[in-house]
Length: 211
Image 1 (tube, rainbow, N blue to C red):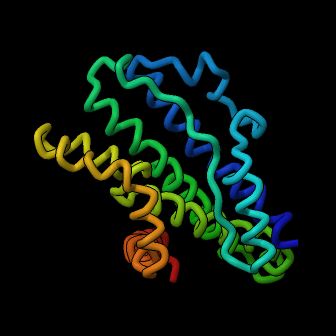
Image 2 (cartoon, rainbow, N blue to C red):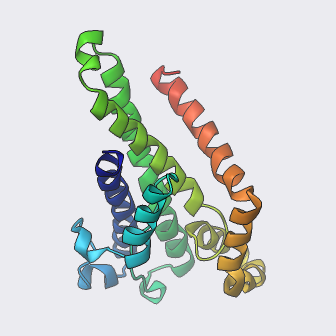
């Protein structure tokens, strides 16, 4: 039952993330994603065999937290009106979209928790779905903001650094996946995601009057 509840939420969240990249790229003058039919919420257009199918099933089978990714939306920064600014905003749009979904889930959860106990008690499945949506979107946002290639955070940081520094920083790209795997193996990535997630969740909870 957990998989049937969580998988559609995960799938929608990662597709929303990729569509946000494509939509922002279109605003900056790149219609690549639109021409290739990627500005759609149709899951077929975004399925990655590993990230969208295999990894979630492995997570479920081993009772790990559900996680995954969609096929990246193609972006041509040479089509941008202002390339460096465009790269930063396109990269940031993905994590920002997940934070928007997180806030939306929190608001709906706040409304649900404000209902009379009799009404709220009959909505346990919806409450579980909203909690999962809130937490998975926090994880997706802050994991993708880690400034290591090929994650979105590397493009944001690279676009904000002075050009000379950015060129030196971008030399880590061939080793990015190995660095991420090392951070996972050492357990560091847990803190890189958990600390900003907890801070954001604390501020959001205070803003909505929730514990």
